[in-house]
Image (cartoon, rainbow, N blue to C red; front, side, top):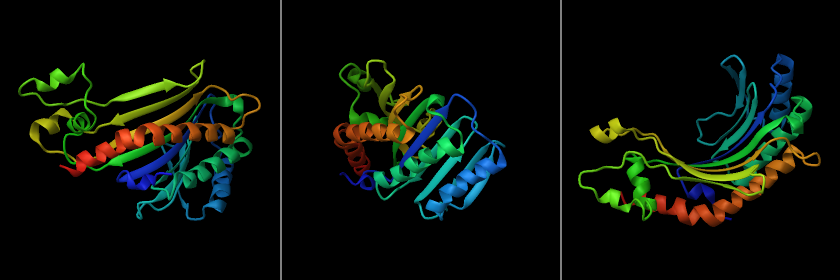
Length: 247
């Protein structure tokens, strides 16, 4: 398996379960859920509430590698930044989804969408959009636009979403997110925001009766890993890293 940590400056794996109904927000329920999670990950000890209804438990961020979990009104999220391996992050996501049905009353019927996101962040202080155009090219149909004298690229965020079943309920998306605006291009004063590449595998709608959330996320994990290994590492991540290194 490719060592993902070597492909970008930061790497993370996030899980998001969006529900049709609101998740429980009672003090005892939320705290009990996080306490059960903390038994497996004792270093997750920073607990706080944001926006009055979003509860978060996370590790200390100072070391650059940390876990987090959030219970919002209609979303249960889990993530690990710079994990030792994708599988290490998946153990946390499986635990969260294993606890959720009993402790947060999450039924397989209640699934609006379940997704698994792999994020790769690159540090680059410059025009992110122009960098992507240089690293990936823009395709034959747009090449002549780049030859127009005096022009500069100010918006280029290629993405592609594919359905992998007949009903289009299971999808995989490869996308990019630039954080350069026209003012920065005009002034040459670029910030330190990172450029991101995302691979997201998502399932829409209620789960099949014989499928639990852990099994569902494992299926998305297999799909995302297949796309990353065969379509993203050598075709997107390494070309982008090489282009940045040459700057």
